[in-house]
Image 1 (cartoon, rainbow, N blue to C red):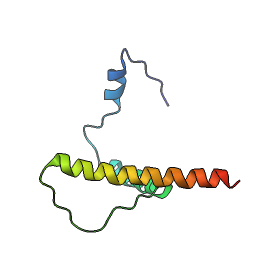
Image 2: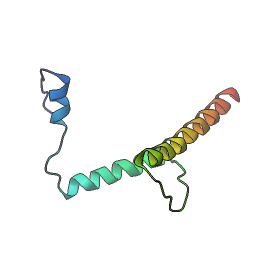
Image 3: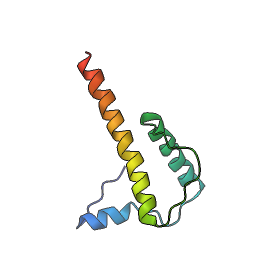
Length: 83
């Protein structure tokens, strides 16, 4: 694997962009998301939700993610205390 040198962090970040994704790129991305979900599955409530604004929808998502993070932290603390 080659080593590249960049003048700035922004240049290095741009080198990661894929402007012409192919089928393999999307397959790899799907595998990555499946793997992440296996490592840390999050329970998303079932159903259809209506929001008046994108900000309201974002707050709803953030609330779900925060509840998940708190639950995960409590579980990990309980497991570390029981050892």
